[in-house]
Image 1 (cartoon, helix red, strand yellow):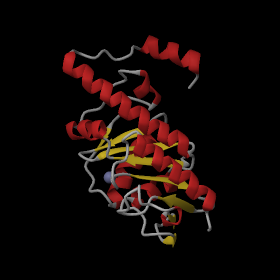
Image 2: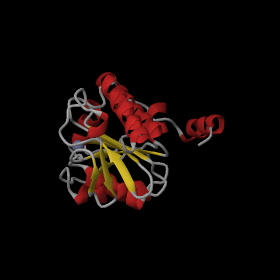
Image 3: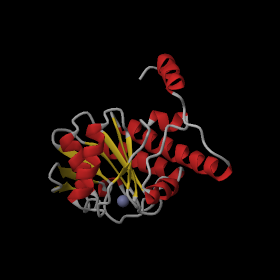
Image 4: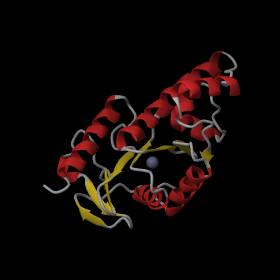
Length: 210
Ligand SMILES: [Zn+2]
């Protein structure tokens, strides 16, 4: 089978995403660069429990299918990110529960915990863009381009997108974001969460680097 090692890497990330509830049934999609001008992405509408390695779609940067099943309907957003942000090697898009919750409110999420700090918080909510359209790519790219440290954005009334310097990094950002959002939600229920101060952020950056 062609593209075996990159498909295996993607497959294992999908399994992990299922195990931690980032991706449920066939909602959400994950991709990674697969060599010169190509992307490996989860196929459209396939439940991940039933997915086989050869089902994983290989597309070019225009979204044309090269191998595997029909790619995710949200492929245009992934390819827009790869085309416009050369440093991005992996992308996770999830409909995880707390991401959707905050995506509905349309308010930026402040730096209230270490997890969200790692994602480059404050985390903005992109303007509404219908899933599967080029516009979803445009609004996402614009936010990532204007905030160089940002690794996660919320998609209005939809979910989240994370980017990384490799697939594991993109996965870690999606996971951290969901953990951070859940904790923020719980904090709002019982009180008023206090964002980390500039001094505290500087202290953390001194110890752990950027
Ligand atoms: Zn989606």
